[in-house]
Length: 244
Ligand SMILES: NC(=O)c1ccc[n+]([C@@H]2O[C@H](COP(=O)([O-])OP(=O)(O)OC[C@H]3O[C@@H](n4cnc5c(N)ncnc54)[C@H](OP(=O)(O)O)[C@@H]3O)[C@@H](O)[C@H]2O)c1
Figure (cartoon, rainbow, N blue to C red):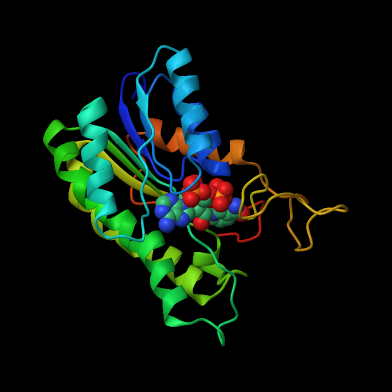
């Protein structure tokens, strides 16, 4: 189950959770494509850190709202690093809107980035993983998929859609050494989605009493990637907000 030497495509590498996960992948010896949307500096920094550790890495750019981007990212990764063993579909778009205000544009973009792109990425990499007999696909969901959350109906629906997607895919590839799972975090600070806890702590009741940290999401994600017997699961990481 060693990650060392595996080729990983990580989307949203320029974000808070992506940065933490990228550093865990480097520490594990993976060769990573750190995909980003607009923040090139953060992604190039990860490439530099990987290179310093003696690992090949690239930072492909692309807007995942464009239906052509997933295949292009996969193609660029394969060309630079070789066949993809690990897909971490972590990029996410969230614009907070009341259900009364969500317009078709916000709906379409949210569903395109958060649900269509993860599907197109998985569709592009899974056949090769099956052929080679080893693979990992991990989607970054959210507690909003279970509770509805605070961002809006478009965001909650996009994340809940990931669960149906993984439940469809996982059994079809499970017999070929390929796992498909999701991590569903909540309220992770140190990200652009949630920059920092306000003074006095979180406004929402969280049983653990604080916001989560990107490193905690990265730790759980790495455990999922290392485990060949865990598949077709959504793992909550939410400080106890949503017991299941
Ligand atoms: N933070 C939380 O509390 C929380 C809770 C539950 C779930 N999540 C999920 O965790 C994942 C990571 O988010 P984060 O918390 O690390 O937030 P973040 O710091 O805002 O990072 C979001 C990442 O997604 C990328 N992205 C957004 N729209 C994109 C697009 N159209 N095309 C390509 N890339 C795009 C961003 O790239 P650029 O910045 O380069 O454009 C960035 O790398 C997301 O799926 C999010 O929904 C976060």
